[in-house]
Amino acid sequence: MRPERLIFSALALLATAGVVMTTNAYAQTQGMERRGDRRDNRDEGREEKAACKAGDEKSRPECRQDKRDTKQEGRGDDDEKTETPAETKPPGE
Image 1 (cartoon, rainbow, N blue to C red):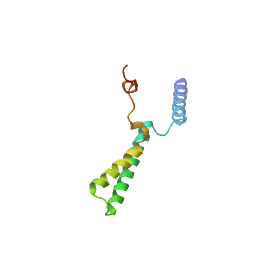
Image 2: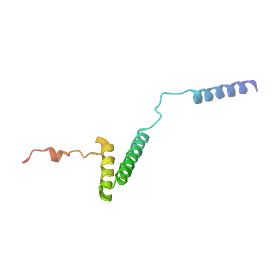
Image 3: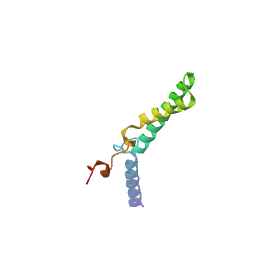
Image 4: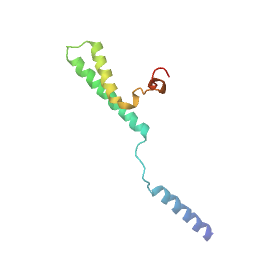
């Protein structure tokens, strides 16, 4: 019974060490970062619309457009349309 107990203790120690040891890892995945960015963009858009509605100089459609513009600015270069090879060819080829 003594060797079994020694083996069990060694396995328990290894399992505990594996759980306790930390590795260098990022706290967030890229998807989580993008989700956070989208949430920030939505919040900024809401703030823009609320500020627009608080003032009486613009109509509802103008406030909605301001909100859209704010959200579009927050999206950055990732969502911009890229040129396809057909668009970059010189005419006649």
